[in-house]
Structures are given as structure tokens and as C-alpha cells.
Length: 183
Image (cartoon, rainbow, N blue to C red; front, side, top):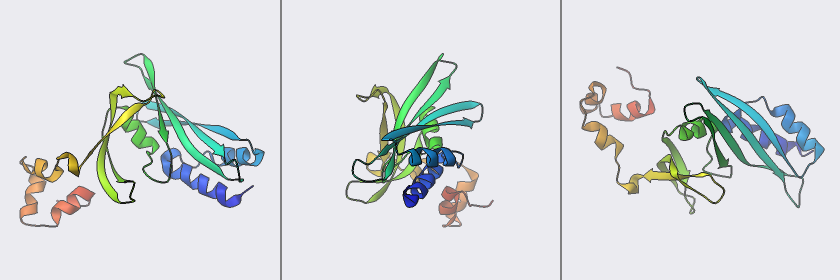
């Protein structure tokens, strides 16, 4: 078994939001040297449960395995059905389990993404429940600075006490956005 590959995958699974509970199953499946395998994960967010199937595939030319995607299933009791979405894992622009949960609930997620030229940009992502791709997954919409939305400008329009401090303390807005501002 390729120990470095296992350690990389273990960390990738952990930092993708699936924790450390799948470590033994991951190791056993790699040792079996199957061409591909799937690990099951159950997560809870408040009262909501999200089941996930993590998909791994072995390289055709080496002993390396890759964590390619996970399919999240969220029970929607109000709609009387389950919502499924596959999120792809790559070098950049991965969606963690919690981000996937938020997207599936109709919330927007703020992420730093990397474009084709390798430059990092910030964008809000939101699932478009009206459009699906050829695999039946909902498409993700991106809203970034080129879209024309300026969060600071929009929030400044509202008389929020904490934001008014930015006039007397210029660094306050930066700390406020990062969640470290003190009143």
C-alpha cells in the first residue's frame, strides 16, 4: 500500500468535512487494491441529516487512488423527497460537506476560487434549482466582483451601529468582516 497516498487521502477526506471516522475503512479499501470503491458517511447539521457516498478510483497506471467526488443526499421532509447532488473533488475549488449542505438548502456560500490561469478570486456560489447538467446535478451560479455586487457598499446603506464605527476606526470593517471586531 502506498502510505503517502493514504495519508494524503485521509487528510483530503478530513478537510473536506467528513472528519476522521472513515480512516480505517479508507485504509482497508486501499489495501484490497480494488479499481474503485465508495465509502459511506452520515452527517448531522442541526436537525438535518446528510448522507454521503465518497467515490474513490485507482489510477490505471500507478498504485495511487484519487478522491474524485461525493454524492450528498439530504432528506427533505417538507417536499417528501430526497435531494441528491454530486460535488466533484479536484486540485482546487472543492465544496466541503458543510458548504454542500448549505448550497442544498438554498443558501449562498462564499469561497475563494482559482481560475484557469491559477489566479485566486472571491465569489458567492448558489445552487440553481431550475437548471441541471447532463448528470442531473443542479448547476452552481457564481457571483463575483465582476458581477457588479459590492457587499461593503450595500451594507453601508443600512444604519448598523457596528458598521458606523468604521468612520472613526478605519480597520474596523476589515475586522468586522473577518469576525474579530469587538464592540
